[in-house]
Image (cartoon, rainbow, N blue to C red; front, side):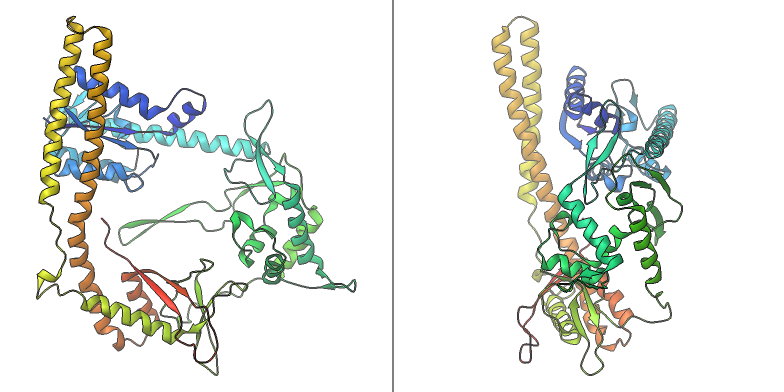
Length: 520
């Protein structure tokens, strides 16, 4: 009989750790290992989920566990409680319930063992998942109410420091507020002053400038930008509309919205007009009058709405990344010459290229990929990994692991019957536990290698034919939007860099294409 342990840290555990109650996973591992030893469960793997994700998709160890349970690898999975397995929606709960049911795998907790073949246990298990979800929702509502109450009190509830401030703990009270960073606050005041009054010149006059020129001015002066990046117009615009600088706290301005597209859930964070705005406990950096003046100017200079009837003209839209600054390259129309592909950051010195030349090189590289493998005709050209040695080595290590567990049980028996004294038992058990840990680590490492090796063949067989079909039909396409959609199916992104400019250097750029491979 083969068993494994699944450990997951909840939000409540993280809060307990902050109160100094010890590391949760280590404590649970110790309890479940002891529980398994007393009940003679041969534990050969331990899965430690270090993230507190709501869904299966956000928990890699749970994905791996379900895959192995579905293949019949485990007779039972040992957990602290049912809610450690799932607190996701009904779909996730159904996936977990059905996986354990069809695999005939038991779920073992210190309080109860759930047998999927037992009708009452199955109902009790499903009810437990339902109650876990309900408890999660209750906790989440309580947290949201607490955040809203804190915002109304003027406290800062986000975990990210806005530029110009440092998050600090409120003395003799719960929660956090913001403390002004003087050197950054001076930059903020300059940004608002330049935007509303203009950039001061040497003759005493002021030159009206917008967000792009403010970003360029700060970069030219060598002012350090937030998170060490360069200043951009988007960064400046977000600062000018952020009420934290006039002493306000804004909450739920960009709530997370979920969408279902082609059976997959996607998250987006659109700006909302229905948000909470309260007076903060922190000090203002700019006056209310200056903030209002900036907002008025921003409203007068709003972007023109995007024309939905206008079709895209860039087949590489959203795919090409500037290797120097990390921003997406944009198409720049040119009435006299071919369209250019250039970096969207004005201060970046990554030189532009003709769009059609970059597109040509991309298709040539993809064509080389499709010709490098012959999936249908000669399968010997495909790299088929030899997994036999890995499988044999894993099997041998599992046998060693079982023997070591048996030796550890005998060590405990020898101590309990008086054959070993305390020192002998301590030394002997310590050596065996260390060997168990090393064996388990090696098995996990080899299993990862085996999984990657097995996926290598599948990836090639799924991906290369798709590239081949694409390169064969690309020249027949006339619509840039269709080309872009097809490219996005096989290309994740493309790094671009060009160090020279001018005539004679049109094709002296380097691109690196990163494929959108099938998920493992």
